[in-house]
Image (cartoon, rainbow, N blue to C red):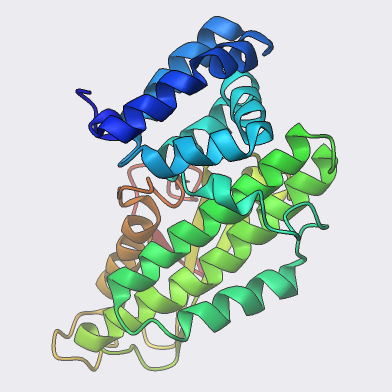
Length: 274
């Protein structure tokens, strides 16, 4: 009863009744000991127990699925530990349907973000959207429904779609205080596994930020006016922060910019001419 999930008498009672089934499911995994310890971690992170323990009682196949995840897929186990409610999504009728293509992902995300007016809430939903889609893809791969090649392309599409929306959000937020640089553009070049469309569940994003501006001495037209070089380096720093900021769902993506032309010690944003 020392953990949040087992504080209530009802949750302890249901969990006690589940113990034989839990041990059997964990014992059937490839690595029972690791699965057992990961189950312990899973319980520790649960905000409450009654609902999910009741779900396991009503749908024993979900307990077997959880055991498989804990025993064989640590990346999925980590996602589930942060968002245990994702298990509910397995019960949806279309969970095992073919994974969405890039356009569908883009439209789904655009539609949902159209209701978010708050910057932080929008970033929070991006993290939630990523977790939901990654979890679906991971379970399909684990169950042999989808091939590894399809998963790599899907995760790359997902990262691109999320990146497009994230960059728009950050730019809009940044322009509200710093304004715009006249006749300028910014592009983000993906290299590494995202560039080759072979992203995995644990991959970071290897990115190079490139900007172009007609007048290198131009100043931004916002309340906090800065020169072009400072403008784009600060903007890129904000973009990276949006990717990597930690929350209860974890970071959106880790970002690696060390392969930029100027190297790890140079500015984040590189001028197109350079």
